[in-house]
Each structure stands twice: as structure tokens, then as C-alpha cells.
Length: 390
Image (cartoon, rainbow, N blue to C red; front, side):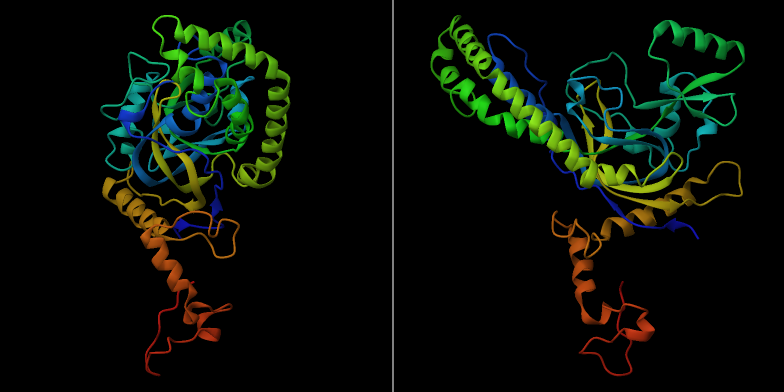
């Protein structure tokens, strides 16, 4: 039977927000405009509330997990302040084996033009300049190695000389490394939020109050020298507070790691694996933190799914769309399971609220089977069948 199967995995991390394209701006830099305190405030605001552009609310996607990025993946300190757990999804109905080009844009166009789910990773018009601008589109891709058994994710060695030697041997053996376009999905961790909250009082002390602070609102307005004076003052105060800030940040860092491993990202990481076909929901955004790409951030739910197969070469577009439309429509209307830790934490959509109300009705409160312990609505005649929803 095709369709979702097994438990609904809830992404509890909801620490960020997205903004309109007009409200996006890249982080500032140390200098006349920002001292240490102002720079810290701006950095936290960027990471938690300004880095992502909203593309269209909550979206659903179906595909296969072809790559997993564990917490801290390729992130040295201090970049590992971001402790999200990420999956990379090859969108249905595509398969890894269908890609043949070494050009990531050719492979990307193969997905974006499919008329099924390609829109989710297609280039968006009128996006702002990202933090790391590029002259060409930069889709999110995963490198796969072909020619050494079944295709598999390829991770280059960190040492450049060793990586070059390995890849030279692969080329000589006729192997290929191809970029596979994916939908990037992030289950949010709490570390950025908790560290920023721990440092917020110190940033206010350094700047002389909330927002830009007293210095920037008074002396900082003096032409030419005002900003420099405030930056110098902030730096002196920041140096004095540095030991206390380091201790507060370290405590928040450790607390976030323990919390996430036990309750937030850890439970998700332990339930998914490479090759899982899944259906996920999440906030659809454009992430400008690097070169700019579409993703689901945060991922709200994940459920394993049985994908359909086709007897014809390739998968007919109309059949693929029918499958995606049906299951995404149903999953998007399903509220979190009653009794889970997510119940009541997040606002429900109107469709979810309607179904939650139906679930609360006595006639839908059966335990074994509606034929055994279900009941009919009180206002129904004895010969009417009441709706039974589980």
C-alpha cells in the first residue's frame, strides 16, 4: 500500500522566524557602525530573525533522504553555534540513477522543470543579495559517487592533497562524482537562541541599553567621530565583561546541547536514516546565510512513506502529482497526535483545528475499533452511522 506509514516525528525546534525580501539585510561588521555589543545584537537578530525570506508559509514535500547532516556537520567553532540537524531530500519522483551530468545547473533544471515538486527548489525572483553572493544560481546539491557499487554520498578528504589523489584514482577507474539537487530541510536546535538570550543582558550593558543603546542615540550622532567614540567605549566595556560573557555563553551552550540531544534534534536523528522515503512539512524559505537557496526551515513533521512505482519508463507526471497532492493535502490537515509533547505548543491551521475538534468528539474516541467501542453522535437517529475519525 502506498502512502505514509509509521509514527509522525515532530520537529519541536521553532526558534527562528522569516521576513519579507524587503526586510532582509546582511549582518553588519565591526567598525564605526557597530562595536562588540551592537555587533552581537545584530548577529543574533540576523541568525534568529532576519536570515530567511518567507516564500509561502508551510509546505509539504515527498522524497527520499539521500544525505544526512548531523549536528555540527562541517562546522568548526564558532560556526557550530548553529546546531540544527539536517536532511537532504531527493524530491519524488526522481531517483539518484537518473542524473548523468557533472554540471549542477543541468541536474538542477532537470528537477525544477519536472512539473511536480521542482518549484520547491527553483530559483526565486527578486531575492536580496545573500551574505555570500554568487554570479550564478547556487542550488543545494549533494555529491554522489557512481561506479563503485551502488551510488553513494561522497565526502572528500579534508586534506587537499589526499582528496586530489583519491579523486584522481576514481577518475582513472571510470568513477564519476555527480552533484544531485536536493531540498534541504533543517530541524532546528536551540543553541543559537539560548546563547543569544544568555548574552542579551551583557549586550545591553555594553551598548548602554536596549536597541542601539544610549551612546549610539546620543554621542553616536556626532558626524565623523560619534560612531568611533561609541565603538571604543563598547570595546572597553566588552573587554571588562569578557570573562562573565564567556561563562554565560558556555553554560548556555552546554545546556542547549543537552536539551537538544534529549528532546529536540536527538530524537529526530535517531529515527531517520539514509535511504528513507519520507513526507515532511515545514516553513518554506530562502536562506541568505550563505549563497542563497530554498529550503524547509524549520521542518515541522516527518513521516516515513511508501512511494509508488510505475510500470512505464520514467514516472508519469500526472500520476506523480496525484500522489503528492493527495498525501500532502491529508498530512497538512492532520493535527499533531493527541497526547504527544507537541500538543498545544504551536498554532494549528484552520484545517488542523477542524480535525482536532472532530477528534475530541465522543463518537471518535474509540480505542480498539469503531465497530467495538465506537458510538454515534448524540443527535443522530439510531439507524444513522456517525462519522468515526481516529
